[in-house]
Amino acid sequence: YNFLIVFDEVQTGVGRTGKYFGYMNLDIEPDMITLAKAIGGGLPVGVTVLRREYFDVCEPGMHASTMGGNQLASAVSLKVLELLSDDVLKHVNKIGELIMRELETLKSRYNFIREVRGRGLMIGVDLDDKVEVISVIKKLMERGVLTLRSGENVLRLLPPFVITEKDVDIFISNLERVFRDV
Image (cartoon, rainbow, N blue to C red; front, top):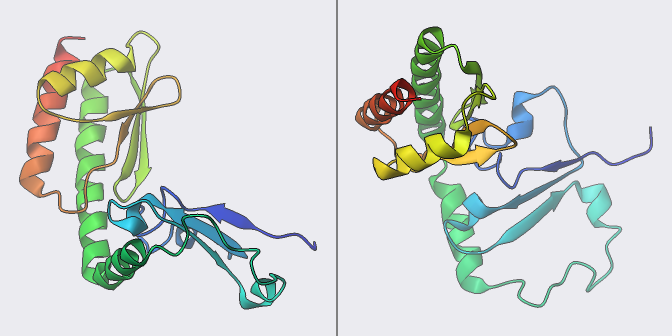
């Protein structure tokens, strides 16, 4: 077709979806991927990865940036990739599946949960319009649980890779208490 396929892996890359990169969950090979956030291990960093045949199109200086090439951020990014192992991905998938099962159980109890979806540790809980996701987020925050919003009414969960089964139990318990009060 003579066009490039570019995947924005800023949030889905570096193991978040249970694979090294989110596109690996699909039946497609991109020509280019962009990475940031997780690959920097907390430091600001951005990465563009492209196939060799397209890299040769770049002329010297085309890929430069004012703050690009920071040695500390680059060293941290390399360490992140070194630490991202198959065992880490197995843990991401195992805990992600546990969270999804627990959320599906809550869905069977609370009819305002429209859908539970996700991969690995990138999960969304789509709530009915009767429930304001912002109020759920605020009530969870009062209980010491940090969640996010996605779109209009989706409770967005991006737990850290070091989350334990006990942490999941605490989260689900707090979420159910909040849902009971809705």
